[in-house]
Length: 616
Image (cartoon, rainbow, N blue to C red):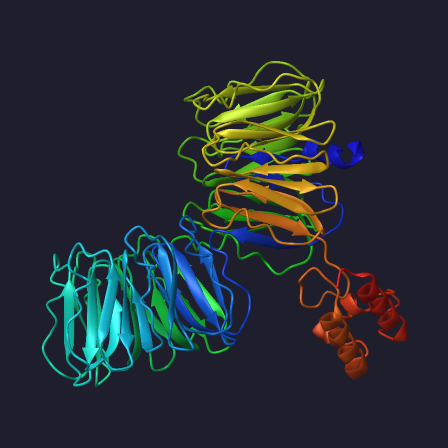
């Protein structure tokens, strides 16, 4: 047990996240939490809420991701769903039998769906819901502070849309009707009876006319109603203060507020549908995959597909890793150049702060990049550094003589490192610092507003991690200890004596067990505590509200579900029979299990044995 945990001496856990080094074998990455677009190419429907997203698969099942603070991502089981709608903090769905279901925030009864099996469409506002019936009538429920539930009479409606506190409906004669909040004239619908498509944003609306042109009205402070010219629009979506449209050639265009990149649409002309949330948007491609952009989708969970990573570090909204050749790669938000990694193949460790990054080179020197308004990238000279840690705006390093150095802002004395040459590990929180001493004791300094610097007594600590305002430590018996802010239970450590690695995020914590499995606790608003199944995790890192792990690739695990099963067996057998070994497609390395340069019956036997011995 002690030998397994000794690697944590060189694991550097940073505030906004943590950095993991020392993985013996190159491996692939997996991520979960905020911004993780689901895998797959079988999506047929999407919906975007305030900060969460829903997707409908071709088999009728649902998947959700993003903010889950009110359970809006806790989708019901089943394969009988036909249409999805995402409100402010709740979700709704139309089932194949014509009935409705809803879940999430329900203070105003917006999830108390009406009974019946005669519904044909569903829409969700911030705190209310709307449905269209098969007889052409409309019904609404939930919050009614702007009379948004006072649906108009009639049975001639063919489509509905819901804004924050208003609704829009399309009639069979091509005219429009709106009701609810009209503070920005969003209910003053344009005249005419040649409308074919409608959508409602927070306080503005869009419609497509019969000639394929666009019209918009309502709140326009960010020009979200200044529609582009043209008559080739076939789908529309309206967000909080931005608008998106799909053209007949399959390309996208967006306009309005762009504070989070929500108007920076992806390239391509293979899109088939689009939806818009508060400050983010989603689209489905012709191959059934999903792409997302804007707020909370900076790509920090969209890990590279390479399988040669040896370490990983995560920051506020960006991630980076070191490959087996010593080079760096980074992904995620890049507003301050924190993902513009330096060239070279001599990097041995990396740490990610709020908006900056730090790396250790093989010669013992340091380099840093990204935001530098507080001198957080002005690394100290020298080539005697052993380990590094990055907080929100400050950084720490452990030198070869076991002394410490720190740089960056010092508002709370987080850079006033203690004297001495008896330190073995460092960690950096938001505005505090933590160190492990050679005698197994702890010391901390910097901001102490949640008592995060009041370290527990004892000399039996072996590893440390620092989150925003809380800390974690592993003891020599393999148990955990935590202290500091505990508003989300991030310090309520699980029982057990088999923990080997720890990571601390903003308000959540993650631990790796000796058997390679994961456990997480604390805030789960973005699914950051919904750890993936499996026992093949080698290392972990925790970001603001997401995580990244280095996972061991199992030979023959073609569907990458961390199990060798009958599906993988079938895939391998098929490839073996068809091609033997095709180096041009670069799969021989995974199927040549005996490493003899050919794919033959011996490899088939090996894979069969893996499958027979595996969990499935």
